[in-house]
Every structure is written in structure tokens, then in C-alpha cells.
Length: 249
Image (cartoon, rainbow, N blue to C red):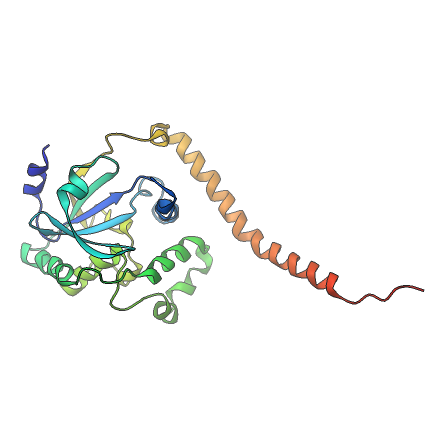
């Protein structure tokens, strides 16, 4: 399908979900997000690392760490082949309602700061064991981990729907991650593009990749368990060797 045909199917308020390919160490955060997605949604939906709002006129509004910006959907996404792309639309909403969501994102000034605090929330939510997740649900934690007048990529999209009064999630926008929009009950798929030039790990059988993720998960949980013990042992050793010990006569 040509890019023009794809654009013909789109309307303001559609959401772009992107699975980035690691090109440099600066993209390591993408794999941290995937790791968190793995615990939140499972193996199949682990890969979404970015979300953007389609505004119409071949443009999207999106938040990067360099700031919020408006980009051309063709040059930024449809004409590239180094990631997976999925475009979804909120179900059972009128065109006008979806336009209102897109309008909110469109009127945000380019260069508006990225919400680093929301990214910290996502990392913590991925790291903290489920038994302690209540810590992040407290309103005090929300105040500490949510910066006003700045947006994380999926937070920007979610805020648009909240402003248009067609919000569908239970959690606040800053708690919404790109993977949350991959929901067949709430959203319909308008277009999906697979990576045309898969990298080596993508060619591995799903069984091998599942085993790899399982082993990484085990190592991660062991790390979470043993790091406090290691810190305690280090401090105990320092304390025991810093005491004054009189020489025996």
C-alpha cells in the first residue's frame, strides 16, 4: 500500500504506536521500556516504545526528550522501514470528538519540555515488585512524579483525549504508556506496518525469545532481592573495620 493510500485512511485523533530499533546507546531507554512492557502486558505487546497523535494534513504531534514537536508523518514514519508502526483509533467516537483531542495536542507549543518525571514513574513502575506497586498509586507519589505543563509521549496523547472528554483509562495520563493504546477492546487498528528489514534478534523463533526474556526476568528479580542485602553487607563490613580494636597484650 502506498503512503498516499495510508494517509487517506487516517483522520485527526488517530494514534501512532512505534517500535523503535536500537541504533545507538542513546536508544537504550527503548529497551528499558520494552522490559517494563514485558511485565505489564506480556511478551507479544512488549515492543511499543513511542506514541504520537495524528493532527491531519500529514502531520503528527509527539513528545521526545528534546521537547514536543510537530513532524511530517510521511518522512518520519511511512517512508521508513527501521521500526514497526501501528495506527489505531478510539472506537465509538465521532470525528468531531477525535478532532478535539488532536486540537489539544496541536495547540501545544513546539519545544514544550518533555516530562522526565513521567519517564521516571514508568521506570519505577517496571522495577518495583507488584506487591509494592501501591507506593506509586499514592497521591503524594503522583505529585512528585508528574510535572505540570510538560508531557511524556503517551501522556501527551492521553491528555488530548482527557481534554476532549473521551478519556477511556482509569489512571491519570502520566501513568499511561504507549503499550496501553494497543487494546483491541478500546481501539481499532487502522494500519499496521511490519519491519521490512528485521535485525538478527527478530529472526529468532518466538520460543527462543521467550526463554531469553524469562531468563532476563529471573536475573532482574534476583537483582532486586539481593541488592539490598549486598548494600547491608557492605555497610556492615565498613562498620566492622572502622572500629578501634585495642592491641592484645
